[in-house]
Image (cartoon, rainbow, N blue to C red; front, side, top):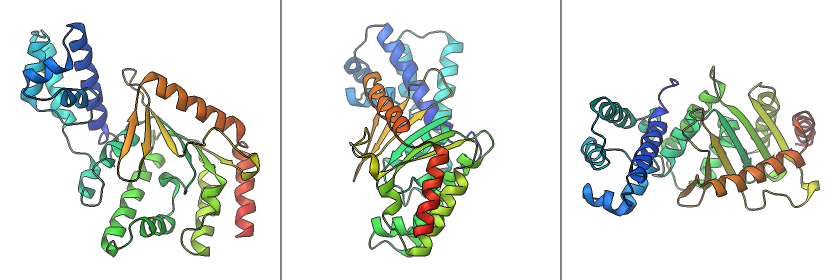
Length: 286
């Protein structure tokens, strides 16, 4: 996976953010902008959030509406629109991807810092193939063996970015429940625990365990991921996976609340060294 491939999602976000600033500077409503390109207000909203691909004609019409007449500026933004439509490496897995997931894979692959809390199972970036297979089989009952293997392959492909040169910082808090809930047989769980011990030694990985003994904590609302990007124009994005869809939150007040919860989780959990000892203890018991 080359480093530039996930960039299409980030380019969409950058272009969308730029178009929003141009629209607001002219005092034009989303409804009026949508009317100018024969689209709805919600389509403009999705474009400005980088959630959809861009048609060159739509971008041209919006730039005209927003008074962008300088040829160099127009060409730069139209070029960005074309680059934003390039399919990422995950496009070849579209047959087994839920329609909301490609956006997340693109964001994950472009982030410089990923912070996550998991309670149900080990985070996908830390799963072994055997554990991932057990998770997919449990979640996709009735799926063909070929589809299951494709999903496992996708998960392993995502992990390459974490291990690549210049990969992201990954700070994760795993609830003890995720480590005690068995997926697969005893050997699968032992292999997963051993893998966590090994990967926690990587310089770009900070792994902490939130033990049962702590009691209630700031992750009570469930699993979440915070994605931060090197581009200063982009705000952090909160990813919340649901049963049939996902939420992406980037409003400042939402981001602040989740960052506060993550900070508290990190402060309340044992540090990486103690957490590694907890993992070793669980491995001996398994």
